[in-house]
Length: 472
Image (cartoon, rainbow, N blue to C red; front, side, top):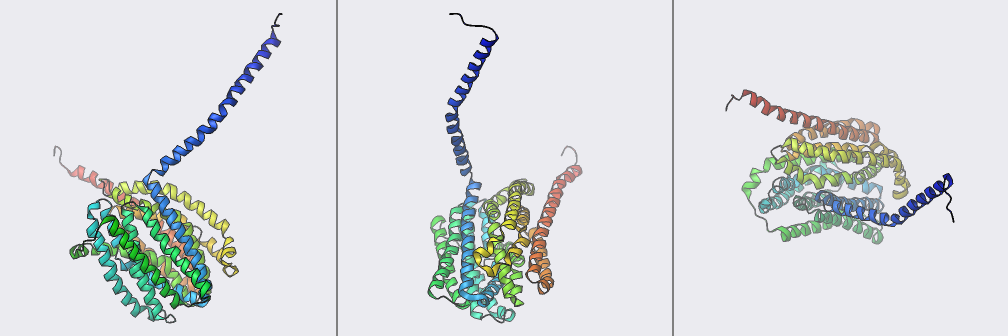
């Protein structure tokens, strides 16, 4: 039998070859489908092994659960206390928060700065934390007992004292113990402490709502103090068991007093431009507006949590970069690397907040419908925070915390002045405008001064080289 050759035979053989190639590729597809998930799994496993990412995830999970629990118990407290008592409690808490940073006097951040590069200094700086929180925190409670009633006349002085003990002593101890674990890059314990406080308060608020149905600010302050004290005691015990006993050195306390004061003032200025607007709304008796604005601000805090988690995990590394020969240049380079990620994340969060704002009244109730507009006003704050957190941490890591403090004080004073003018005239809208200007302006100022300082430090060796004689 003869096989027909020619053009028809060649085209048939070509079709057979093509079909054979397709069949061979199809047989390879199952192997490819198995190959790519394995690559993704290995890639995810390698990422999970990176300390910065792992610690950021721990901080993200801890702060995420904590802030969600806070949002939940604020809603429960609003129903438990009613609008009037809730407004009084919010005003008292904001007033105490303006001074509570001085309870630890920056001892937790001092621990981060000096123990992160050298873990052998743990015992003396741990003792410094305990001395600062117990002594200076007690002094603050006495000061608030005497001064706060003059500014907030409608609030029971016992509420102020209980909140002051819980925040200035117990709360600062809990924060400082979290910073101890942060210095050792054990963010799991930091996340656990943050979660324990918020979830305990939420459970307490739900229990009180189910059993009492209604309470006042004084009763809630007592219950909240019990939670704060229990958490602080647990935190101190865990640190002592994990790392060792403290060593108390009054000389070290005196040596680091000024540096700790700078850290404390820096923290208090942050509280000023974050919380003074809420205290002023309460002072002017705008309790409904305060509730609307505070609810929107709580959502902003939750939304900014991923950015804050990244910076909390990276903060000890700023001090390590600052201890390198490059100093400021090294911390500035590290800050830029972080900013490339956090700024994009901030923009994504801002768009999500603007589009998702109508969900607030569905969750919190129809009474919070105006919070939709308030949230849309404030939605850019996470983006602005990515800038001033990165530049500020770079300055702190290079030992320029005093420079950061100066600009934070400028921002706090500017925010206070804007609120004094805007809140009486525009209520919560004035407070929102002041917050936007403050966060955005602080980010711009800190990056300008960071670039200027880096440029000046870079020029200094060049001048010295010119003045140096040849052959030396």
